[in-house]
Each structure stands twice: as C-alpha cells, then as structure tokens.
Length: 276
Image (cartoon, rainbow, N blue to C red; front, side, top):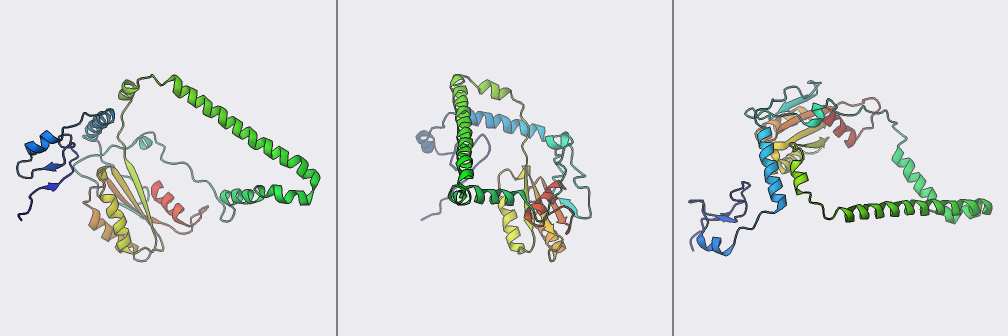
C-alpha cells in the first residue's frame, strides 16, 4: 500500500484556517472534500480576533528595540531579541510605573498564618465558649450569627442588582462598541524560578513554552538562586539552546541571597526576576 503524501497540518493564516487536509504539492484541497465540507460562516469572535491580529502586526512593525531592560547587568543578561523586528514597550513601561515599592516583611509573622489562626479559633467557638462563660456565650454567639446574616443579606442584594443590570442591558448590541475600543498588543511574561533542579527539567519547561504559537509575544524570565550550583554553565547552555526559539526576550537573573525584608523562597525569587 502506497504511503499517503498528505498529512494533517494546522495553518494559522486566514486563508487555510477552515481546512483540515492540504495537498502538499499543489496546496489545494480535493474537490470531493470541498463539496462535502462547506466552509462555515465566520462568527463575531473570529472577525474580532482577525482584526486584532492585523492591528497587532501593524503595531509591531517599525518600533524600537529595548536595549536596557535591566538596571543591574552584573546579575542579569538579555538574549534572543529579534534584531529584524523592533519591539514596542508595553503600557506599564510607557506610564513609567514598573512595580510597586517592596514592603518590609517579617521573617516570622505572616498575615496568612494569622488568618489561619483566627479560623481555627472562630469555627469551633460555639462548642467551647459555653464551658468558659454562659453569659459571654449568650451575647457573643447571637452577635456572630447576626454579622454572618448581615453579610449574606448584602451579598444577596448585590447579586440581585447585577441580575437587574444584565436584564436591562440584554437588548444592547455591543458589537459596534467592542469594535471601537482601542486595541493594544498583548504580551506575556513567563517567570521560571530555578534552584537545584536538573538542567533537563529546566529545558523541558522552557521547551513547552517555546512550543506555543504566540512565542514571539512571550518574554521569558529564568531566575536562578545565587547558591545554585553551576549557574553560569546552566545560563550559557540555555542561552545557546533557545537563542533562536522565537521568544521576544529571554532574561536571566541571579537572585542574591540575604536581601533585607525578604523571605527566602520561590515567590521572592520570581519577584526579584520580574522586577529586574
């Protein structure tokens, strides 16, 4: 049996997005397939997505390359910037607001621990408070019930308000309103925190991001800890392997150890990498 020269190809272009099997030689479909499967009408979402994609492609042309992304070149490096296409900085950078100031934190006392402690005290309260004082239980428990009932009354009123708003606007045509909205290019930032993970595991994670269809709009931040063994060799290996993977930017950062007002962990590592 002869091998079938066809294979299933997914095209992202507008011309082939409704076709499944494409002839590789003539780039055309068989008449039998065309007659059997009619091309469906484009719905509203497909029209809007097509217009947005065209606008983004136009905005991405003729913009300026970001040369200075990091303030501390000692701990960071930037690779894989497309030299043929200049990139436009996003709205956050245009407004000059990159991030909030880092708040001082305690190494021991954390708000989430205090919240968990309050839960363990309040939930079994009706069972153990009568053993302490019947007089306190007589006033405290009804007061707590009244607070919870009031909360649910407020939630019910707000839910009814939203239902009425939806009902009153059910006949509104938002097609024209959405089409008139300002369309801005959407870019993604993916942060990968690393410590003592094997290089193979990091490569697998980065490769899964590189396989995305919108990889040219992804800025990848790979943040290593200062105590990571062979961090320099790992950065160089990842740089050589994914330099031409199509990322908008690949940024390597080294998270210093012992920064003031910082709790060691993955969150502080990612926070440092994204701030750079």
